[in-house]
Length: 471
Image (cartoon, rainbow, N blue to C red; front, side, top):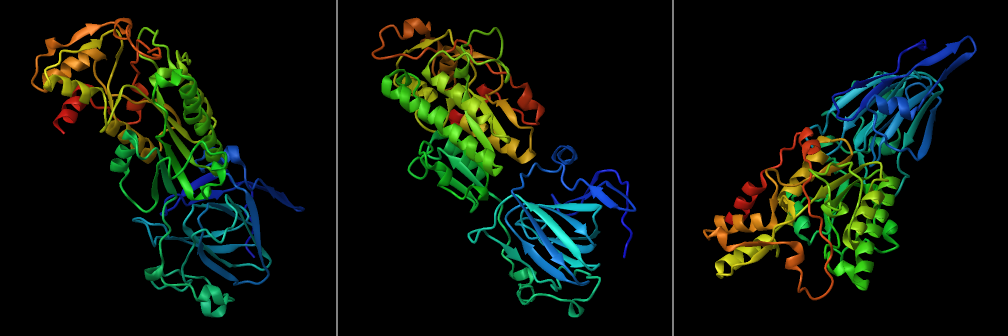
């Protein structure tokens, strides 16, 4: 029987399997026995362990040397340790991707533990009698979940078991598991894109592509304002929700019906998503707006500037931001003056230019255009790089412009005389408007330094405009 090592420092060691991490645990003992902190969230997450949110603790007791179990891969994460005894462990990556089939082996005793990410096959062989193998998991067993299994004797992975398999106790079920060539890899956790039929939703589909684990949902597919939303999906199967759904009719939001609809879509729905994300460890991406500010600041708005919305639309968006921020894993994408592949300001100006119309356009609101494909690109970048959670401003780069400046640029780039555009104040523009008019922030310029620090370089809004008009 191996002697237990006392007095180690808590440390983490990466393995060839991405996300599979071995931890050395401090064990304190004397002639009476020993004590250890088997799971200590604060210390272990500080060393890079995912804050995986365990919900169940399981123990497998094995009374004989050579008991061999596995190889099983479940759609949840596991924190595995040994309470008593010692094991030889073998882990095989059964996830889709370039590391499928990668093997790692090591011995575990009470002074060592291992974090096994979702989709990595787990197996072990006991090296001492009365061995108790324990694991914390972050989901409950379900017959609807997708599992993967690999034969313990698979020649492809070639695990060098300390005790030959023909000399040990193996269950009939484990003996019948398939070889690696027959294993269906475990797909990544699902990505849900809401608002998939909108301009940003369509840009996200172009950026993310059509893959089996990505779900695009419009309102007909998933009503985010439904009180039963928490039971609408098996949410533990989802790793990311990108909320591109919103009520954006700022003027209509000033009407009684519009006010109700704006708050339901922009505040209540994100709050429901945030509760779901917090409960199931989902990363929630939510798209916000410059309208959460009143536009009175001298200079660009930073992510941490205090809210000061002027109208119902901005108020409902600010409330949604507050709700989303309660989800531990969240990205709030704050943007402005969004242009996509549908009806929008740029297309309207291009049409007016072509038809010989000389428009009056607001010149006392300043900001930068933001194209939906750039928003989609920033979202994909933040997710793929694992950027720190929080709020990020995402707009086009370059000099600030008024709406009149942008209209003149559209005229110029389409071969028309930009002097045909006349600048007017916001008050002049809406002087004869029929129906309610939402107050607009005069300054919508957003600071982009935090986004740049993640390695994402926003394209110049003028350059994006030129590309957009060419397309």
